[in-house]
Length: 218
Image 1 (tube, rainbow, N blue to C red):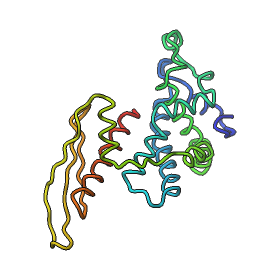
Image 2: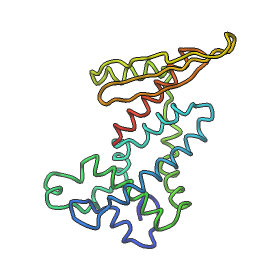
Image 3: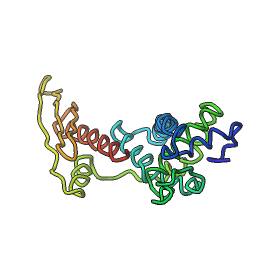
């Protein structure tokens, strides 16, 4: 039993815990499927828990829950590392403790539950694991521009650049199109429209930050 789910076909759980260093078959395809399932189910939970959150904020919250470090922590709680099948090289280098390997194995286990019991069984397993995490996840009181700036400063990277693309509409209902650009560690940009230049900048910054957090997850 894993994730609180009794497998009808234990070979699926075994495959989910088989690292590519063993050869083929391994858990890489299952990791791909599990990543998508996990993202969708956690997104659903956050959508329910935060009815007033913007799309960008929901993306940021999801990135906090499903990043590599967070998933590795859950894998350790489930003691998946003790059951991993690793090749000789990974065994010698302590692969069963490596965060990326643990996170991948956890995602593969999510896929194994789906393949064994269907979507409802997978959804129930994920919701049980993440319900307390979603409930206790703090929502930052800092605005998106501040969070993005702090995220980049913490890594010693250049600050974002904000560009006014256009403004349109009548004076009493003017709309502003703004672009937020980050050049490092990779080129990321997002555009947003708001009733003020500031609100558009905030929305664009939220999107850029969410994309950076998603990249760091990988």
